[in-house]
Structures are given as structure tokens and as C-alpha cells.
Amino acid sequence: MPPIQRHRIRLPDVDFSRKLESDVYFMLDDADGGSRRIRFHDYDAIYAVPGLYEQIFYERLKCDSPRFLAQRLEEVLAAAGDDLNRQRVFDFGAGNGMMGEALAHHGVSRLVGLDISAAAESALHRDRPGLYDAYYAADITGDDPSLREALRRWHFTCLTTVAALGYHDIPAAAFREAFNLVGDGGWIAFNIKETFLGESDDSGFAVFIKRLIAGEFLQLYHLERYRHRISIEGNPLYYCAVIGRKLAPLVA
Ligand SMILES: C[S@@+](CC[C@H](N)C(=O)[O-])C[C@H]1O[C@@H](n2cnc3c(N)ncnc32)[C@H](O)[C@@H]1O
Image 1 (tube, rainbow, N blue to C red):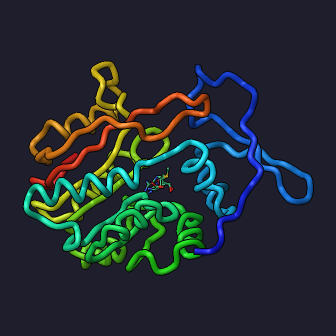
Image 2: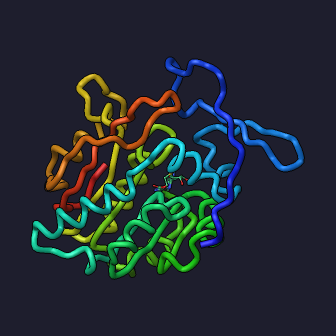
């Protein structure tokens, strides 16, 4: 990995408590005295600047999800008599490889990433070359039989999706495609904002997740509320880690 570059970032002096965090922005100062505004969810702009994603989300906002999910996955598999080292993992919504790095730390048999963003793929090759056995920049719901065939040939036994489900990120239809690429009996691990499991959230995505967790498609092994990261005001943002076994293909 290249040396970590430091950037001058500034959070705005505004009370965002009533806004969605996805609307929040920060200012990035550049070397020639200029500065620009970047929204938290403008991943392409963030990935384009080496080290910026890590600095904002992992260092400043203390995101711990890849390490946490990879650790829990290893523990859950061991308790079930399986082994993370044997898994052929599909890291869906892989970004610039933070989850891939956490998984590689534990050791997996195969590691394949996919992200809808070409900027994520470029950042991955730039910052963590060789981490994945293959990495695809594509829309998994697109009409591309060669992509589907290429993914099927990996015979995935495990799916990981970290910090990428819901709202402006991966929609239910895309997650369904990824889920169905894992063989029956394979492991599924993801995290979601805790509100998606609340009774009051009847948005399409929350209904999908609740049906997935409670339904006949997934055998739940582990459900845990934990601190995913802090907000820009320093408050804990809780997510739920979900680990289970695929029982049957998800149908729409
Ligand atoms: C917050 S980042 C998380 C990246 C990585 N998993 C991590 O933990 O650092 C969310 C990622 O989801 C990706 N994403 C959003 N919609 C997607 C889709 N439909 N298919 C695949 N990836 C998607 C974004 O491009 C972005 O890289």
C-alpha cells in the first residue's frame, strides 16, 4: 500500500441533526489554496483522492465495521464447525477494499469484489493492488450475461456486504442477485442501520430486510447491535451485524 496521504478536511459549522447524513458534506482543501465541497455519499469524488476515504470514515468517524464483521464471521463459522479459510467470498459493494483487507487478514480461500463504481475499482487497484482475486465494476442487475456467468464460475460460499445496504446504496434487487450467487448452505454476512429493523420503518428496504431475516431464505446465526461509527457530531451510530446461512434463493 502506498504511504498514507494526509488531507486537510473541514466539517461545516452547521447543525445537521435534522438532516440525513447522506446530505452532509465536508470541505477538502487542495494544495493550491482552493477548496471544494464533497458530500459524504459522493463516493466517486472521495475514492478519487488517495487516502481520503480512510481519513474521513475510518480515522475521523471511527468506522469499525470491516474489522468487526470479519472477526464475527470467523467466530460464527468456527462455532458452527466451519472455517473462514475455506470460503470463496463475494464482497459485494466492495468499495476500495476495506472489507477485503479485513478478510485477507483472517485468510480466505478466494476473494472476489464487485462495486457499481468504476472509481472504486480504480482506487482499489491504486491502493490495494492484488487484494482480490478478481474485481468487477458493474451493476449486478444489468443485462450482462457474461458478467453473471463470470460470477457464477467462482462458486461462492460466502457473501459479505459492509456499509453498503439501503438508502442511497445497494437496493434490494441488487442484493437479491448477489445473495443468489451463493450456494445453498453458504454464509451471508452484512450490516444495516438499526432503524431498518425497527417496527416503524416500513420503507421498501426495511420490509425486504425484515422478510430476509425472519423468512425462509436465511437461517440466522448471529444478530448483534454495535457501534458502526460516530456521526459528525460525535454521537454513536448503531448498526446491526447479521450473519446467517442461505437456505434458498431469494425471490422477488
Ligand atoms: C460506504 S461504501 C462501503 C465500501 C466498503 N464495503 C467498505 O466497507 O469500506 C458503499 C459502497 O457501495 C457501493 N454501491 C452502491 N450501490 C451499489 C450497487 N447497486 N451495487 C454495488 N455496489 C454499490 C458504492 O459504490 C460504495 O463503494
